[in-house]
Amino acid sequence: MGRKARLDLVLDCAAPQELEGFWREALGYRSYISIESAVVLVPDDDTNASPLVLQQVPEPKAAKNRMHIDLVTDDIEGEVNRLLDLGARRAHEGVQSMGDTRWVTLTDPAGNEFCVCTGIEW
Image 1 (cartoon, one colour):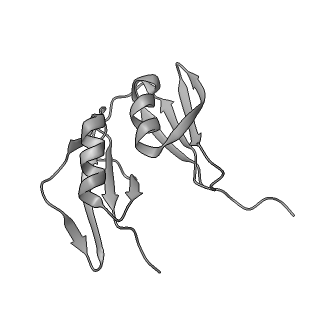
Image 2: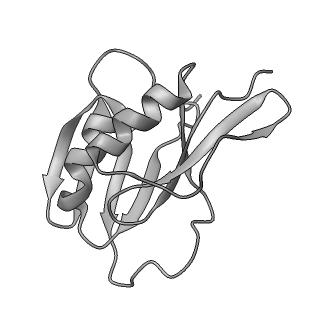
Image 3: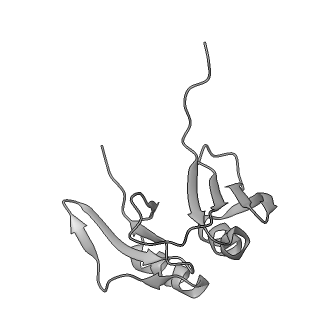
């Protein structure tokens, strides 16, 4: 029997190495591969967290991402402030909510949307 499917996250961008430091610090990951066309970031511990691949693509970002990354935390404002210090920007003011889940939408230095949220409980 083969290995179970695993989720790797891939973010298309114009210049992977320009986003490498931001995402490495944002996630607490380490650089596994760093070349002009791609950067692979992996957890810096033995967790089963998904790798993040920053993949170079020729076309510019044209609209809102169809899929985005959520960084889950209990301290949304503290994490938002840390990420703003790293170069993120707020996409909206205040905290949004749906049921018990709360979030703030940010953009990375290249304008890719991501959220800082309390996560989904099931």
